Every structure is written in structure tokens, then in C-alpha cells.
Amino acid sequence: MPRTVPEPPTWHAPPGHETITLHLKLITPVFGGGYEPREVDPLMPIRPAAIRGHLRFWWRALYGEPSSESADMLQREALLWGTMSRPGSVRVTCEVLSRGLEVQYASVAHKADPRRGPRQGVFLFPFQEQRSENLPAASACKDAEFEFCVSWEKGVLNKQQEAEIRGSVRAWIAFGGVGARTRRGCGALTLKVPTADWLPPAGAGELGAWLRSLVEPNSGASPTGRALISSLRGATVVLGSPGDAMAVWERLGTFWASFRKGHVGETPYEPMRGGKWLDFATLRRLHGRDSARLNKPYLGLPIIYQKLPGVRYAPKIEAEGSGRMASPVILKPLSMSDGSVRPMVAILRCPSPSAVRIDGRPYALQPNGSDPVLKAVAANDPLGAVVRAAVSFFRPNPLVVTGRSAR
Image (cartoon, rainbow, N blue to C red; front, side, top):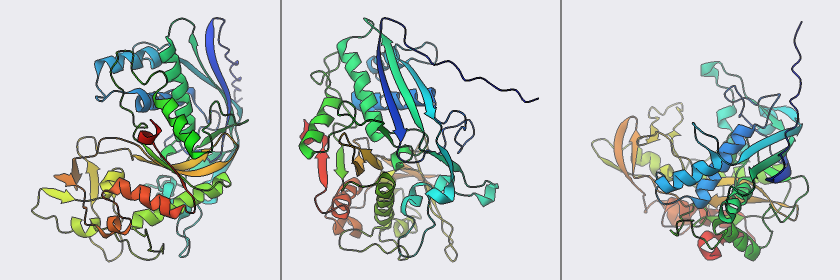
């Protein structure tokens, strides 16, 4: 007979521990994150180990130093979040309160049509049916709720370190999520009862101060006295008008689909019309050269061009060395402390790629400043074009906040 595995008992922090306990819920479906690639674990759609990984990333994004291999930074990181050989001071647990509903890919990623384009489907292509590999479309989970708890023993950490933990939690909820493709709005979160303690305020001035409180939890300096470098300190955040979370996500998908085609500025988005970026034409003329002037690689790598009928050339662009480069652009519904949800386009501060591999061959990389898409929005570089295009797309009255102006 099949065996029933009992639910594990709820973990409670022992006496003498500082704790942060939050009741969180999904505002967009979660994809992936389970033991099977592309799949959600039906028994545990939200995993503590995965949350710890997200918190570690946002701690680095907020409080990391210029070199990711800094010995001092690695020691500070290990003290909080642990290493492969020893646990850190911070314990992360979660209890799933509601497993939500399983939903099929087609009900989340609406079929693209000639008038509106793919909408949020532009974010979900890794989860669509893969006929060449005999993989069906992935399913997702929506409306799940869970209690998240992070705790540490009193007296072990100083005030700066405790502030960094709280800042990492705030950044994860605001800019991240759970599961896969969180930079494209999957698995976005809010609190069951919105509160200004953990969610950003709605006003532009207050939002700037909130960003500053993240990157400067205690005088803006590390325990060693060196200035911090932060992906969020130099970030630019563009927020559109509030709306329903799924409608906001759909609007973000339309923005990104139009931007990837280069339909920006005064050019209306027409899904069936060709793209305006010069990258593909440049790629076809690279024979015999050692450098490439391209713009899309600055938005994330790899880039795999589709094999379309009548077009023989379908290159693959990868980051030199690792093959991958996480996109510095985050597009997600952002839950605010007043209960509203706004479309957010956030451009993180991060090093730009200097080299790529195109179909396996190395090339030095530079942006193409003469691209008509950059000129259409009066931008000097691809990431600047994202900001200007977002401001135009989400008018009237988008909120624009920069990490530098928040200081």
C-alpha cells in the first residue's frame, strides 16, 4: 500500500533568538524551483534552501564590495549565510500555509496574437513546449501562501549585520521572488497584510529614501570602514501606474517585447513588424573581424536567435568564459506598502561584458552608439535606452528613482 508521509512539525526559534516572521503570498505564478527542472514541487512549492540562496544574492547586491572575491566580503558572507562546510548564523525556514492552485502554461502565457504580441509570454519561453526534446509545457503554481521566518542567536551579530539581514529581506521581497525567472516577474511576492516596515512606500521621494535605507543601513560603511559598492546604489527604477498584479505583469511583457524589437520612442509597437536593432545585420558582417559592436548582449546572455523559414543564419551569443550573464534589467510587479501594485523596470548597476563568444568564436564587445534605436530615445547605451523607453512607455507621470539621487 502507498505510504503517507506526515507533515513535518512547525519549527519555532528557541528562546534567545532574534526572529523575523512574515506571512507572504504570491501575486504572480511561480514556475520551476522543484526537484525536477522546469517543474514546481507539488508538496513544497516554496523551499527554504532556495530562499536562502535569494537572500544571499541580495545581500551581495546590497553590501558586497568591488571584488566579488574579496576575502573580507566572503568572510562576512560566510558568517551570515554559511558555506558548503559550515552553517551560517542565520537560519531560514518557511511553512507553506496554502499550496495554491496548479495552472497550465497556456492559462498564464496567453497565445501571441498579431495585435498585442506575446504579452507576459515573452518572459516564459523556457517553460513552453519543447517538441525537439519531447517536453510538454511546464505548469505553474498560483496563489500560494507561506510563513517565512529568518532567525539568529542574540549577541552573535552586531547591529550592522542585523541591519544587513533586514535589508536583504526587504530587497528580496521588492526586487526578487521565488522559483525561476524572478527577474522577469515570476513568483513575485507581497505580504498578506501590507506594511511599510517591509514593502516600499508609494511616493517617489519616500521610495528614494527607502532605497537609501537599504544600501546604507548604518552610516553606509562596512565594518572595515571601506565604502560599499552596491548593485542597488547605482540602480535606476521606473514605476508605472498601479493596477491588478497580473495586468501589470502583462503590461511589462508588452513593454519588453516592444523594446526587444526596438519599437520605442515615437515608433508604435507592431508585433508582426521586424525589429529595428542593428545587431542582426552586424552579426552577418562579422566574418574576419575580432570585435563586434552590438547592443543586446548588454541586456543579458546567452542570446539564441530563432531559426526562421528562409533565414539560414541563426547565431548564438554567449558570455565569454561562463557562457551566461544575468540580465541587469528586472521587470516585475512591485507590491507597495499601500497595497497597490505597480509595474517596475529596475536597471541594476553591474559590470558590463567586454567580450562574447559568437558561435564559439571570441569577439571583443562594444556598444553600437549609432544604432537607430538608441537615437530614437536619445540614449547613449543600451541600458540607458531601457530607462528612457520605460519612461516613455509608462507615461503619463511615471515614477523614476535612481540610487545615486537617493543618497
